[in-house]
Length: 143
Figure 1 (cartoon, rainbow, N blue to C red):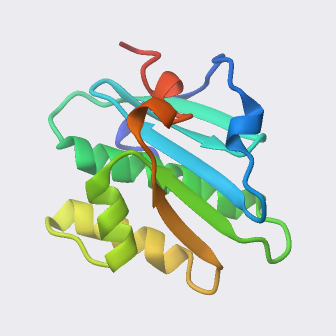
Figure 2 (cartoon, one colour):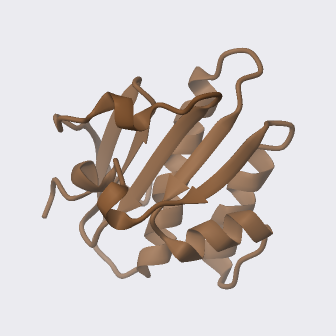
Figure 3 (cartoon, rainbow, N blue to C red):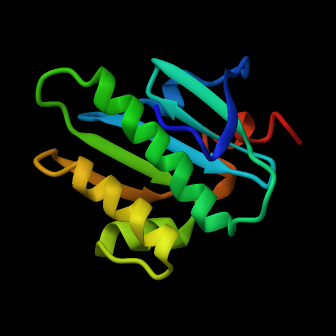
């Protein structure tokens, strides 16, 4: 996994309510970012968090990076023809993935990478309120 933009990947030891992660017909990737780190939760299988390298990036770019990390993990573990639900509390990431376009060179490149990797997959993106974001706790471990 290409995590050059992160300092290191750590398995989070954060309690999760697994029933909150379940989707009725597809796998779910929850992703979130904070100022110091990002995280994704792959339905019942993986929780990963990582600290950002020093330097400034807009939060929506970091939110997209966290989503990409979760999608990459899902693709590695994918079974058969299962579909995927991407859940984010970032309205910019949600709209960019839903519309298939984004502004800003780095942000657009990450959105394009996610969409390209999911070609041929039954997937959708959903916006969730921050208070319902399962990946919120793991993304704040470094705070």
